[in-house]
Length: 551
Image (cartoon, rainbow, N blue to C red; front, side):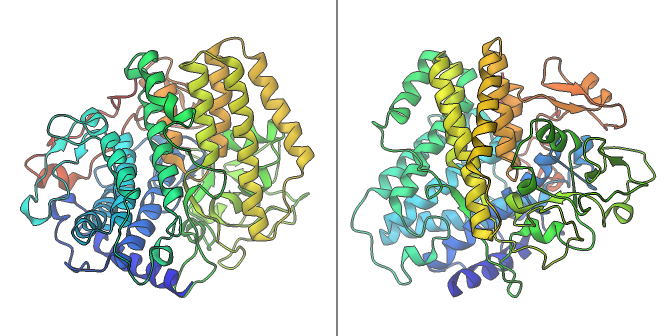
C-alpha cells in the first residue's frame, strides 16, 4: 500500500513535465524529471498510472473528451459540440509519449539487457495497447521512430494501417503483442526486489493474467479491422483466440485491465475523475439522451452511474434542461445559448457522474451537494474488461460468423458481466448491489430487443447500445466502436447531422443545441508537433477523414 502511494506521487511528478508550455512531441525526448538510469521497479508503475490518467475519465484524459463526443458527458471545453483546436489534446498526447511510452521503452531496453523478460513482456503489451488507442483517435502518428531517444527528435508519422499490420521496416502491433507474449513465457528472469508483484499496479505480477490480456487485445484489434478484409480472413485470425487453442482469454473481473485507486488525498491517490467532478464546480454534466435512454429502459444501473444532487420530490427552476421524465435530472445541452448554461447556475443542482465511473456517490434518492469527501473515489479506471470481451465476441459471431444463436449467447454473457462489474464496485464501496431479479428482468428485456430486431444491422444496434452503456467511464473505445460500426445511434444538432456523412449513426436532437462543425472522425494533432517537427504532416487532417479501419 505504501508503495502504491509512492508510485502515484512519482507518476504525478512525471506528469508535471507535460504541463502547459512543453506539451509538444518535438521535445518528447528531453525530460528533465526522468533520470537516464532508473530501476525497472520504479519505471513500471509510473507508466501504468500515467496511462490510466491520460486515457481515462478525468480532466486530463482522452476518455472525458470522447465521452463528450459520444454525448455521454458535456463539459465547458466545447468538444461536445464538435469544436477542437491544435491545443485541445496536447496534454494527453505528451503524457502518453513522455509519461508512458518513453518510460515504457526504457523498460524494454533495460529489461532486455538485464534479461528480466517478465518486465519486457509486460512493457511490450502496454506499448501495443497505448499505440493502438492513439492510432484509433489520431490515425497516423510517430511510431517506428518515436522512441529512439535524443537520436531522432523529429520522428516521422507512420501510416495508421502500417502501425497495426506492420511492413517490411515497421513492426506492427500484432507482431509486438506476439513478442510480448513470448517474453512473458520465458524463464530465467533475474530476481529483483521489490518483486514484480509489489510494483505491478494492474495484475500484481501475475503473468498469466498479462498473457490473457495480450490475447484479448489481439482479438479486440482483429475485430476492429474486420471491415478491412474478408470474413474468411477474420475467422482465421480470431478462431484460435475464441476457441482457446491460442491460450485462454481474459477471465471475469480478476482479469480486467484496469488501475485501482485509494481513498487518500495526501498524497492524492483518488480516482482523478472524482477529483474533477466532486468539488465546488463540477467539470462535467451528463448527456440528456444518455440518461433518459437508460431511464426509459428502466435500467437498474442508473443510480450507480449518475448522482442527482436533488432529492426525490425536490425540483428546481432556471436551468438549461430539466428532464420531464425525471425532474431531479438537471444538465446543460451541448452548444446551447441558454442564459442558464453557466457553471455557477448549475453547480449545486446538476447531475454528475456517480459511483460506477469515478467512485462518486451512489444515488440513494436523498440528494445533497457533492463535495470532496462525499464519495470514496476508489472506483478503478477501466481500460479493457471481460464484459467488453464478450461484447466483442457477440459482434464477431453476428457479423463475421453470421451465427445469430452464438451472438445471442455471447450477448447474454456480456450483459451479465456488465451488471456483475457494477456490483463488484458497489460492494467495494459498501453500497447496495443490484438485485438478481432486477438484473434478470433487464437482461430478458435486452435479449427480447435483440430477438425482435429485424436485420443483422438492427441486432448489432442492440449489442452496441448495451456496450455503449456498459463502457461509461472509458470513452476511447466507445468513440472507436461508433465510428467503425455506426452504432449505437446518438442524437446531435441538425448542423452536425447535415455536415457529417449520411448514414453515420447520427440522429437529430430536439433542436436546442448547436455544433461548430461535423462529427469528427479523428482528433487534432498538437499544433507544436506540426510546426516544429519537419517530418510531421505539417497541417491538420480533415476531421471527416476516417481512420483506416472505418470503412
